View (spheres, helix red, strand yellow):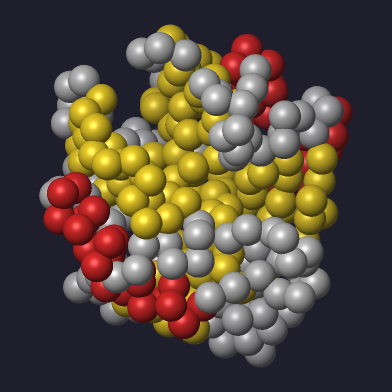
Length: 266
């Protein structure tokens, strides 16, 4: 399993009230199979490759949500930068056996994310293919603070999308303020982007917190949306076309929200 570049998204997992129900839902939707992990945790595999994990919530106050982790080769230094630049450390670095070391934090707008310093487990064994992770973006009301935070903490170089060419990849509304993140040392733009930042507009309830939305690649966006409905989930944003393919925002049958993206035909 190859190491991930510094600050690249390298893993996603979901916290669910009912782990077995989650396995049935995502197994049907993405064709995932599962193997037992440590504790109430199930690794998800697509064609035998690690793509995500499902975890049973240990505390009912925890949100039912997908979480994303960013790679770091020095988690202690990353945690220090988070504190220095206005973020909050929720869970200090903790070792996950021989797999690696993890921490959880929130940006200045309150969006929660994870850090992963790899040991034996590097992260995804497959991505950008149907049934695997392909994109993540943070939604915030404090874009100026958040933009500076991710640039300082992760070294991201960001580029604004041309609003005349596209809307926000996470919404059907055109002209929304959106920036793409590219790793340090690369030319910022769509070809190098690993994630992005959007803005929570007044169209959403004031109590909606900042959050990360992660996407999975699919072969057929419309069919995936219909499958989610059939399995008891909900469609938050029906399928629509963007320059990068066809996407939808969906919710599983326990309330966790995620996106799906069908790449354009080349």
